[in-house]
View (tube, rainbow, N blue to C red):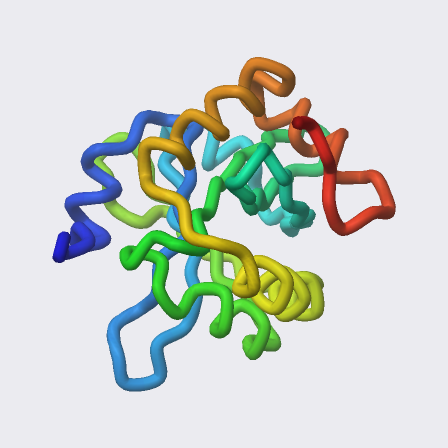
Length: 177
C-alpha cells in the first residue's frame, strides 16, 4: 500500500499553477484544496473570493472526476484538480466533499509556505454525493488507465481555463469517449 505524501511534501513537489485536494489530519478531517502559485500572483489576487465547478468524464472504463477553481475579480486565475475515485490516496475525499458545508483553499507561494487562505461555501456537495454513488457501481481501473484518461482529457482541454469553461455545462457528466 502506498502512503500518500504529506501536505508539505506534496506542495514542494508542485509547480506554480498546480492544485491538489487533500484531507486535513484527523480527527475532524476536512477537504482542503492546496494551491501552489507564485507569491506575486497570490498578492495580485487580493481579497477575492473563489468559485468552483465539478464534473466527471467517462473515458471508456475509467471515470475521471474534475474540479475547476477560479479565483480573482479583475485578474482571473483557474486551477484544475483531477480525482481518481479508485485511488487509495484520495480515500474519503468524495464522502468528505459531499458532507462538508465549506471548502478551504490554501495558497502556497514561492517559499511553499501558506500565504493566503480562502474559505467558501461548498457548492459541490450534491455533485460529489451523486458522483460517488454512480462511480462506486462501476468496475475498478488501475492508476495507469486513470493517467491515460486524464492525458486524453488534457488533449482536448489543455489548461484549467478550458476545463472551467467545459464544466459550465449544466450536465453532471461530460462524455468524451
